[in-house]
Amino acid sequence: MNFPKPSVGMLPNERLAYSAIPSRKKLKLPKGARMVIWTVTNVEEWDPTQTMPRTVLTPPAGGSPMPDIPNWCWHEYGNRVGFWRLLKVYDDFKIPGVMNINGSAVEAFPDIVQACVERKWEFVGHGFTQRNMQKVDNERADICKSAEVLAKATGKRPRGWLGPGLTETWETPDILIEEGYDYVADWVLDDQPVWLKTRGKPIVNLPYTQECNDVAMMLIQHHKASEFYERAMDQFEQTYKDAKDGARVMAISVHPYIMGAAHRVKYFRKIFEKIRKTNDVLFWNGSQILDWFLKVGPRATS
Image (cartoon, rainbow, N blue to C red; front, top):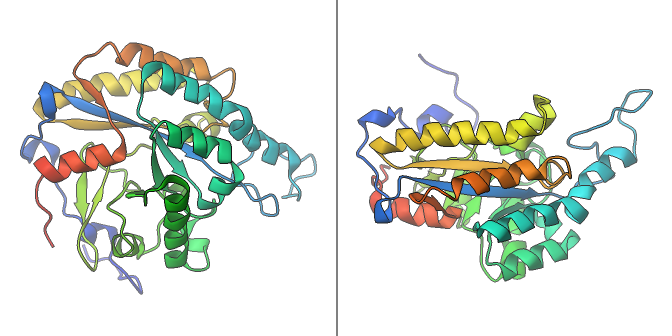
C-alpha cells in the first residue's frame, strides 16, 4: 500500500522493517537471566499559565479557567509528597531508577534531582516543557536545551529520550541522533530493542509501555488502584514465559502524582515484593539495556 509522503522526514514504517519476534536470532542476557525490567518515573513541571495537560476536576461552569488551581495542585502534590513515597519503594528493593524529566523541572524541583543524583539514577530527556513536541517553537533547540540542563545538573549528558506523551514530529529521531542521543523510547511496538533508521546513522528504540502505565490505567481507563499491580503481574508472568525463546524487556511507567498517591503506592510496592523473588530477572536502567543490546543484538542496517 502506498501512503502519502509527509513534507519532511520518513513515515514510521520507513524507519524500521516489520520483524516477527519468533523469527529473530535469540537474544541472551548475562548469567542466564530471562528478562529485564526497567521502571521509569516521570517528573514534569506544569505551567500554570497554560491549560493543564491533564485534569482530575472539571470546573463547575466548564471551559479552561486560568489559574486552574485544583488541577495544578493535584499534579504538584506528586512532586512535594508522592515522589518520596515512590523513592522509598525504589530504595527498599534496590531498584535502579530512571528519571524521565522535563528540563524546566530540573530547576523547579531541586530536591528530587539531588536525591536521584545521589542514588546514581539515569536521567532521560523529556522535553524542556511538558507539551507536545509538535507544539514547541523549535524542536532542535528544545532537545538540545534539555540535554544541556541535565548535563549541568547531573554531570552527564542524557543518552536517552522519551517525549512528552510519546509525541514526535516527522524529524524527531533524526534530530535526536544528530544531537548526541543514543536511544529513544517513544515507539511502543516491541518487547526487544529495535533499530530505527534516520537520515544519518540509526538510533535504538527501547521497549516502553502504554499498558503498564499509570496514566492509561488510572486517568484514562479509570481503574481502581489495585489494577496497577494486577496488570503488572499479568504482564510480567506472560513476558517471563515468552522469554524462554529469547530475552525480553518489560517497562513499568509511573508518575508521582498518580502512583505516589497514598491510596495507590502500596500496589506499586507489591509488584517488587513479588518480582524480586524471581532470581533470573534483571532490573536495569535504559543505558544498561542499550549497552547490552549493542553488544549482543543485530547490527543496524542503514
